[in-house]
Image (cartoon, rainbow, N blue to C red):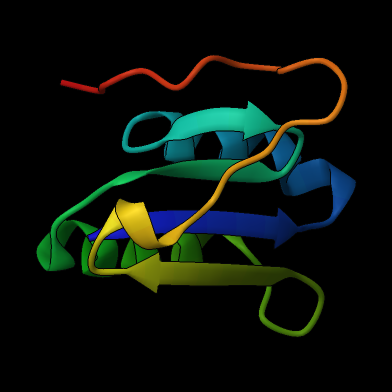
Length: 87
């Protein structure tokens, strides 16, 4: 499954969220990650993030698709981070 994850969290939790997500996904821009994942990994990320964020202050959105070919990705300006395969 292909995942795009975006987040808007309080300043004091940004680094924790970013470091956690870097273990699983590619960091493509401030507050944006993407990459291929299995369902179990997605559930693991959701559980891990729920331990870091505050539900009444922070927001995380997961967009998923079964096949990346259904997503067109166009960059305008500078590409912040090249997509790589995470092992």
